[in-house]
Amino acid sequence: MALISQDLTQAVHFLEKEELVAIPTETVYGLAGNIYSEKAIKAIFAMKKRPFFNPLIVHIHSKSQLADIVDSIPEKAQKLADAFWPGSLTMVLKKKSCVPDLITAGKDTVGVRIPDHQLTLELLRTINFPLAAPSANPFGSISPTTALHVAEYFHDSLPMVLDGGECKNGIESTIVGFEDGEVVIYRLGSISLETIESVIGKVTIKNKKDTAPDAPGMLSRHYAPTTTTYLKNDVASFIDDFPNQKIGLILFKDKIKHDKVVHQEILSPKGDIVEAASQLYAALHRLDKMNLDLIIAEKFPEYELGKSINDRLERATKK
Image (cartoon, rainbow, N blue to C red; front, side, top):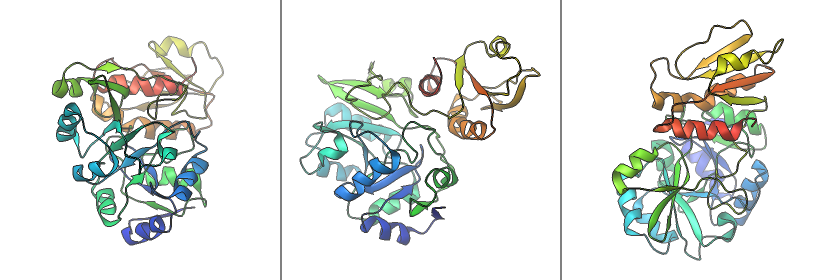
């Protein structure tokens, strides 16, 4: 099992040796390596079994660092950075030539964010290079929100997981790009569409692309349990289609009475959509370990983070 520790000195040691360390953020745990080390970046792709056409996100500790890796910062990007950094917003900007093409899948843009997690910010301030850090899970599987999730995925292949506790937001960052001066959402995430629009005005969603994606999280199949999973508006009636099956449920706030159900995960008994988002992946991890025949997830209300939850569940489920 990978070493789980809060020892920053040890994490710095591994990263400076061009090895990988899993790091905590407010969204999910990331599998981190030095962006300027070809060895480290190739190791990220290899360990995750991630295709090279899927770009990585670069993590920095301050807005002042942005000028080191991007060519220009549009006015709207500056406004978004002022509103949401540190935080769960990734911005795709024109990169400087010092950012390796390996990270950006050959594109002339790079995704950047400042994570809102004190332990990882301290780590980023201690080292003299930014970190590339996609989610610390095998490609396509459920993202990790605890150090143990990461250690269970990678066992002895990863030297260390920097333990920052449970991720408070629980789903990935929202990713935005800038096309013809306008803001485009490439991935719905922990900052809702409505919240972004309250700062910047109307934005476009363009979050599905299986070929040469502009950002992570755009592939149609992603974030998936090994257990067959369905997303339904009417969960109760769908259960009846599967007699003699062991069924687990993911529900927003209310339990369903049904004798076929082995276990139910209620993401927010008080109906708080933010709490529900923060609990989504942890619930999927628990259900995926129960040797169920199938998981049925309830479709969430299509507002604020409900849209982000549905986006994740749609990519995780059987159509």
